[in-house]
Every structure is written in C-alpha cells, then in structure tokens.
Amino acid sequence: MTNFDLRKSINWGLIAGLSAIFTAAVGIVETFDKSRMVVSPFVSLGFLALLWLVPVLAYRTSLVEELEGVERPEPSVGNVWSGAVVGSTAGIVIVAFTFVLNTWNIREIFIKFSPALLDILTFNRSFALGALLMLILATVLGVVGGAMHLIGAETRRRTVAAVLWIIVIALFERFVSQILRQVQIDDLFDAVAGRSLVNIVYNDGGLTWGAAMIVAAVAYYLAGRPVIDFRETKVAAGLRSTDRRERTRWSLIAAGIVAAVIIVSPMLLGSLLSEILANVGLFLLMGLGLNIVVGLAGLLDLGYVAFFAVGAYSIGLLTSPQFNIQWSWWTALPVAIALSALMGLLVGTPVIRMRGDYLAIVTLGFGEIVRILFLSDFLKPLFGAAQGITRIPPINVGITSVSGINPQGILYFAAAFVILASWISYAVQSSRVGRAWTALREDESVAQVMGIDTVKAKLSAFVVGAILAGFGGALFAAKVGSIFPTSFRLLVSIIILVIVIVGGMGSIRGVMLGSLVLIGVLGGPTQPGLLLEFADFKLLIVGVILVYMMLQRPEGLVPSVRRSRELHHEELSQDAWFDKSGEFTEDEAVAADSEDGS
Image 1 (cartoon, rainbow, N blue to C red):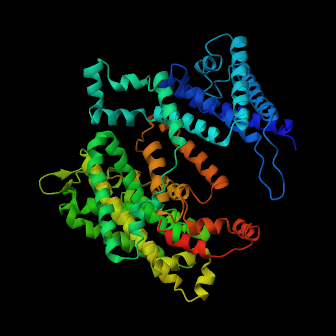
Image 2 (image 1 turned 30 degrees about the vertical axis):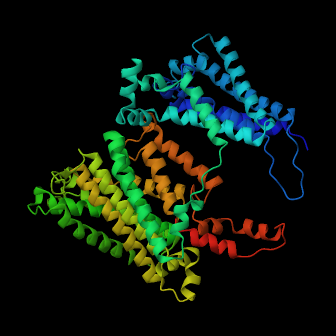
Image 3 (image 1 turned 90 degrees about the vertical axis):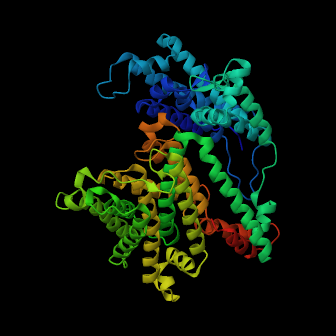
C-alpha cells in the first residue's frame, strides 16, 4: 500500500482551493486582513483564514484508517508528495480565481470581490509575481502538512499545540490585555521598563514575533507534560468517598474553592469581560433547561425562547412603573417562575402525543405565537407591543442595586442561578424522573410498555425546562432594564439548541462548554463576544461548526457517557468481539454511568 494517491490528493486540493475562494467571497479574508494580525507583521488573520485548510487537508490526505488485520504503511516521502499535490492544486485554484478578478469586473454580482481583495491575493504586487508567490506558498504549506507524518507522534502533537496556542493567544488579545491591566502587571512593566507589557506582547492586535516564539516554546514544553486528570485528584477522590463525613468535608472544600473563584473573577475581568460572561450565564441557564427537554427527555423544542420571554415579561409587568404595580424584583421573581412553569404545562399538554418533527413544528409555532402576541397592538395596554416595557428597575440588594450598568453584579447573580440550575439538573438527572426521561428519549413505546407514565414524564420535562428559562428571563429583564418582542426571536431558540448539540446532549459540562465557546467567544444573536471581528460572520461559523459536529462528533464536545454509548452502540459491540483479552463485561460501562453526572 502506497502513501501517495494522486487522485485523492487532487480532490482534497480542490476542496482546499474552493474553500479558500468561498472564504474570500463572503468577505472574511478582506475583513480580517485589515482588522487583526496573528503574528505581526508576518501573518494576518485574513491570510490565516484563506490558507489554514491547505496544511490540514494535506495531512488528512495521507491518513489511513486503521483496520483489523490490515497493516498500515510506514510514513515515507510519498506523504510529502501527496501534501505537495494538495498544496499546488489549491494554489492553482486560488491563482485561477485571482486571474478572474484581475481580468473581469464581477463586483456587480459578487460585492465582496473588491480591488482590496485582489491586492491581498497578489501580495500587493503584479498579477504574475503575486500568482507565483501564492502558488509557492500554498505548495510549501501542503509540503509541511504532508511532512508532519514523518515526525514522531509526540513531536507532531507538541508542534500542533504550539501553533494552536499562538493563534489562541493572538485572537484573545482583549482578554489577555484586560487581565494584565486588572492585576496591574502592565503598569509595573511601564514603570520599570518604560513600556507596557501589552505593547511588548501585542502589536496591531496580534502577537509580536518575539512573544509568538515564547508562547510556542512554552506550549511545546507543556504539551509534553502529563495532563492532570481531575478524577485522580484528592478532591475528586474525596467527593467519591463512601464515608459520608469525608464526602461532606470535601464537598465543602470544593464549594469554598468555587465560591472564591466566583467572587474574585469579576474583580479581575473588568466590565467588558464581566458583561460577556454575564451573557454566557444567561444562555447557559436556558441551555441547561433545554438540555433537560431535548438532551434528557428527547423532546425537540424549537420554541424554547417563549419560556424565556414569559419570565422577562412577567418581571417587566410586575416591576415597571409603566403599569403602576411596581413590585420589587425579589417579590416578582416567584410569580415569574410560577408563570413560566404554568406556560410549560400549557405547552406540554396539547403536544403530549406528538413526537419528532411534528413536536418540533408545533413548539416552533408556539414560540412564534408568543412573540407575535407580545408584539400585537391588541395587547398593547398589557405588553407594550413594539414599544415593549421600559423603566424596569434594577435588583435591590440592600446597600446597592444591580443592573446592566453593573456587569460584575449581574455576573454574580448569573453565577448563582447557574449553580442552582446545575444542581437541579444533576439531582433530577440522577433521580427516578431522570431515568424515566432517558427511557423516553431512547424509545417512547418501550418506555410506556415498561410502566413509565410518559405523559407525566413529558410534562415534568417541559415544566422544569420552562422554570430554568424563567430564571434567565427574570435576570435578563433586570439586566437590560427594558424588553422588546424583538429580543425573543426564533434565532434565540436555534442558538440555544446549537449550544446543547455542540456541547453534548445530556451533558451539563458540555452545555457549559458550548455556551462558553458559542456565546463567550463568538457572541449571541445580538450580544458581543470576545472576537468582535467575527460579529458579521458568527452565524456562518456556527453553521460550519454544527455541520462538522453532526458529521464527525455527533455526541458533542463533552458528551454524556450514556448518550455517547447510544450513538456508538455498533462500534462498542464490535469492540466487544475483537477485545484482545477475549472477555467483555458491562462493569466498566456501569462504572462510566456512575461518573456521568455531567
């Protein structure tokens, strides 16, 4: 078996080239080339977006799937040739695209094909010289990707880690700079060296070449160190202890550590990062609720934002002077939660016999009906129609008040609600009701035959999910100070569902990671994220991420053990037959379930 397949290499090269053209066509290359450097002054984010896929696919081309009883070919110069073909093919496609831009004016059809893009693709030189440089660069990147097979697995892993950390530290310039300023390290460097540390590390939004080399060296070293497994730490062992006193003691220690982190973090993060994390907390609350409905019970709800809207409008109606009731936020909160739970019951009752796509369509319609009712002129005296509800007072906490102008305070409330929601999710998931939800998700007919009250299980899932969304809506109303129907569009429900799918359905830790990545990094439908440059393209990026997850990792980033086993049941069964020891037991699977509180 050879390492060089010309047809396969050309195919992957065409994919890399066409992907580069698509990236340029939607405006990513031009936008990112102007706005941000990765390593100043050598690599811009635009060029990275254009060509990053070339070395990745050049490496991917020579990968051979491991099959039982089939010997894998040893890495050879064929891997390099394969990578060179991928790179040169991608380069030819990009050069052909550049020729079209240089010869014909097609900007009337494709508005992003501007002269600035042509200058980027030709390196601000003539077409002939620029095309030659692009072809050479793409071929070199392909050779690098193919040559990665020739180095050891450990070296390859550490090299990739070094490159990734350079990109990550460069992209999160705002986060790193804010932390350095908050802990006053930046001021200390400025006083001692006459130059701030931020200016030493960053230039034009990207790492300086010296800082990039240091980051690469540190990442390369740390990638070779053993990874700390939390499950093997003393704290984890204490939390799993069979001794009740020992378990209680370590639970209090862990709670103290979490509380200390929550208290200190807003002080270090500053206003901007606290605002972003507060938005993450709001979406995480809704994600945990939808995770119960979709991830545990298997009920596809596309109108989940309606429960969020009910919680927000309840707070607005009861607290805003616009309606002459003017309760305090604390007094209105139980009513908002009760109304959200009632709405969950009202939604769940009519759709109790529906499954799958039919349930999704009905819940989608319910979400739109709620939004239109809030928007209607007929109910304007009650809900304010398009003008919404304004002058919602902040949360009174005695000596001060918490609102959107105090993002650190909102972050504390969001963290408290997230902890409460996580505890509820964990407790319910491990209970008899949680097991009924799991059985309902796997096969509703079989669950009913086994004696599970499917009507009660479905209604309880809708109610618990609605309560958690109601918490989020109540906090959102106090944070923003005014609510409008446009804040509760269908897109919000879609984004929450994507968070659950990408993070891992049925996994609490997965929903947390999904919220942090999609909302904290990219931003919500109208909320900013850490990467402000991605604001115009975040829905495109979310779509790409979702397609990739569906194809390559349907169980999510941090999957539930039980859910992962369901999706890969056939693979696990095959592994049982081919187990080298000749034995296969369910003990390890049962043990994994006991750890699956996520």
